[in-house]
Length: 377
Image 1 (tube, rainbow, N blue to C red):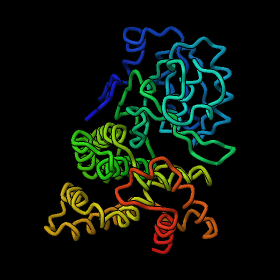
Image 2: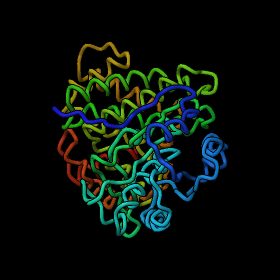
Image 3: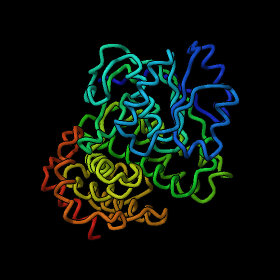
C-alpha cells in the first residue's frame, strides 16, 4: 500500500513566528507572494505575515469557493512577478487558490485546462500553506478544488507535485475564530476523517490516521466552541485532528458527503464546511447497511459502548446530528434551496469523481433520496 505525504510540516503554538526563517533557510525563496482573502485582512492576522515579510505582494481577492475567473485573472499577474514561492494564508479557499496559482505560475492557459490528475507539464511553484481554520486539510493534500464558473462545477486539480512544500499549522491562529466557523470547519474536519475511514480506497495507514482524528476532533470541538481563546488543549487537538484527517483523506478519498457539498457549493456558493456538516449524518445513514462494521468502530471511538454493530452505527449517526444541533449548524431547509433543484444537485453529485469511492454504490436516484431525507428531517 502507498502512503505519500511529502510536505514538511511545522506544528505547534507560535510556529508562525518562524515563517521568515523557514522561507530563507529551507525554501530559499527571494520573491514570495501571498494569497489570502478579505476576511483575513480584516481580522488582523495578516500582520503576523507582513511583520516578517515587509513589502510582500498580497493577493486578497480570493472568495469562498474560489472561482476559476478569479484564479485566471490573478495568474496573469503572478506570471509577471517572477515569483519563486506562493504562500496560501487562510481557510480552504485561499489554500486551494494558492495551489492553483502555483500551478499556473509555471504553466500556461487557464485553470480549467488542468482539471483532473497531473495534467500540468511543468512542476508548480513551491507552495507554503498556513491554515487559519480547523477544517481544510488542504495543507497536507495534493488537491486544489476550484469552481468552474461557466459550468458551475467544482473541479479537482491534482498531482503529486501539488503538495505544499511546507505547511505551518499553528493552533494560535484560530484563537479568534467566531463560533460559527469553529463549528462548520471543525465538523468539516470530522467529515474528512469519517469519509477517509469509510471510503473504498482506505488502507491500514489511512485508517490509523482517520480514527485518531475522529477521537481528537470529537473530544475537542465543543470545548473549542465554548471558549477557543482559553481552551488551549482543545484548540491544539482540534487543529491536530484536522491535519491528520488530511493525511487520511489525502491518501484515500472522500465519499458522497463531499460529492453533494461540492455540488451545492458550486451552484449556490454555500460554504463547504457548512454543507459537509449538514449532509454527513444523512450520507452515513444511507451507507450504514454496507459498512456498519467500520462505522461501529467509529462509534466506539466516540465513546458509544453498544455491542451490536448496527445499533452502534445508528447511535453514531444520532451523535453527529445532536452535536451539529448543539453547535448551531443550520439544517438543509435553512439554505433556501428549492425542491425543484434537487434533481440537478443529485446529477451533479453523481458526476463527482469521488462517487466511486463511496462504500455503498449509488446513482442519481440515491443522491435524490439522500437530499429528500435531509430536507424533511
